Amino acid sequence: SQQGEEDPQALSIQEGENATMNCSYKTSINNLQWYRQNSGRGLVHLILIRSNEREKHSGRLRVTLDTSKKSSSLLITASRAADTASYFCATPIGNTGANSKLTFGKGITLSVRP
Amino acid sequence: DTAVSQTPKYLVTQMGNDKSIKCEQNLGHDTMYWYKQDSKKFLKIMFSYNNKELIINETVPNRFSPKSPDKAHLNLHINSLELGDSAVYFCASSHILTSGGRGDTQYFGPGTRLTVL
Image (cartoon, rainbow over the protein chains, first blue to last red):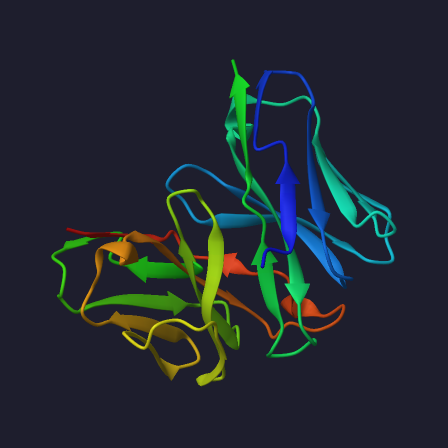
């Protein structure tokens, strides 16, 4: 069964606006990651937040994590047309080490209109 | 200086054929993965290998056989292709996943779009 569920499924905004995407998960986690996938390309790691962190920044990205609500949000500020992509949250499941695996949500399709 | 590469990028074939997808990483990682992404973009792990040893096999039909000749390569061979195998297949690599360690991030290849007719 899926671990992460993103919300909304699709988001369309104007260039310059902020985009907020949410992810909920089911079991306790060690960390939560966000990935971006441009059309026809592989996934690219954006940012990782550990379970003992509440907020993390990377450039125009801001990620929050609320372990009590089992949810995370990804905020992209001052969006650009180049941010148009699908965004996935991912969490490791299983014991750490070789048996651990990342499970991904279904993704959010972000469209940034020029 | 591509980190994770896959060949071919596109693969169109008839039902019943056997095909292979190759993956190579030059990041020095010890763990490699195969994922399948369906038409709704849902990404599901199929296999993981650590130091050439199969670690995770997510109840994938035995028509799918991964082979890792060395740590830098993980190939995927598919026998008797079926229509439902049509998808995009991604290879990825990482250091071994550890709590707070280097292995938390996975690096993905560009994908192989497989179409079975």
